[in-house]
View 1 (tube, helix red, strand yellow):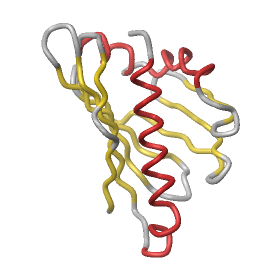
View 2 (cartoon, helix red, strand yellow; view 1 turned 45 degrees about the vertical axis):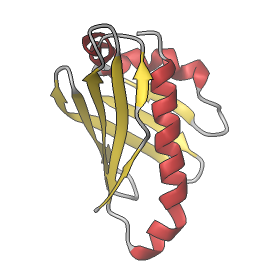
View 3 (cartoon, helix red, strand yellow; view 1 turned 120 degrees about the horizontal axis):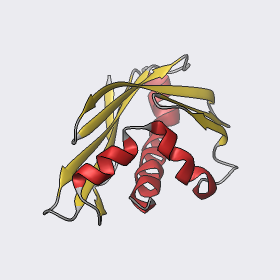
View 4 (cartoon, helix red, strand yellow; view 1 turned 60 degrees about the horizontal axis):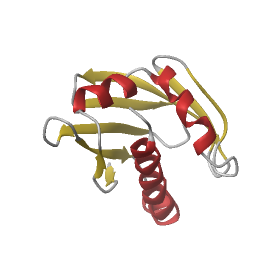
Length: 136
């Protein structure tokens, strides 16, 4: 399994506040207007699942598999052509701020790795950037 990480993002809100917003995927409603439609379509969610249609991959659903309050939310892909796990790590940065990083592990054979490694890294960075813009 290959691991990919976004850069660390600074968030001007306390760790607990960031975690409480992200652990319920219903709160992703705030992101709908911030994601370009040419990148993601048919974005839907409930408390434990988020589904998006990505032009290069098709429809992808992730579901929450573990919550480690207030520091980590772990997801796994459901029905994806590429098996992967994703998690959001949140650490405190003083009492009024936090740092966040998005990490993915994917089972990629040599051919796939060469084709999607760069878009995967860019996608993780965009996810992290978008999550860092939310008003927590």
